[in-house]
Image (cartoon, rainbow, N blue to C red; front, side, top):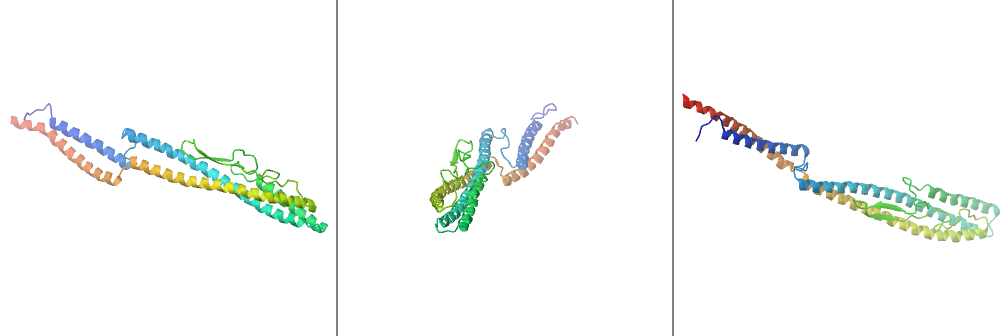
Length: 276
């Protein structure tokens, strides 16, 4: 064994071990503070890269949720309008059938006609006001219908066709100027109304099916987003129970390292005993 006051190998070794312990302790404390075992690329470049990509997917799915919510609300408004139009057509049919009676007195016919026109115009009012966030899919102004993105990069979509429920259209064939002022016009109105009721019900079926598909997609996207979040957690989240136990172990090692360094630093002083 060589004695030297110039070189203290024991102190060097103790200092290196203490430095490693301090590095591990700092890493453990960071995990406890952040709750992450991989908080940056330097912790684990491959895992961090994967986690970042998955976080991007989650962000994309958040946009999908917003798109689906918007589409769902737009369709809810459209369906409400369609149901209201269907109800009004039924009321219009009642008035028109009553007005077909050739023996109806003038006052009664006039009253029926006035009610008919008010109900007829109410269809226009409902259709023109059935918009959500500036989109109306029942007044003929939206050719592309309701479009919602369904995946994280926006490359896939669901489209629900618009349904023009305006008067004098291909669905509601009743004219916007239709009256039941005579038995003849009342009979013509009944024919138009019957055809319109059938077509409106078909349109409501299309809107309802589209809305159901949107709701199913919303449920799926929610589950997919949750699954990805869990996957990210599995990759980067720290096991705090294990980390806490590791922290206590490293703190003990740090204290022992300090004592070992202190002992190693005292070794050169033993050389003095050789000169007494």
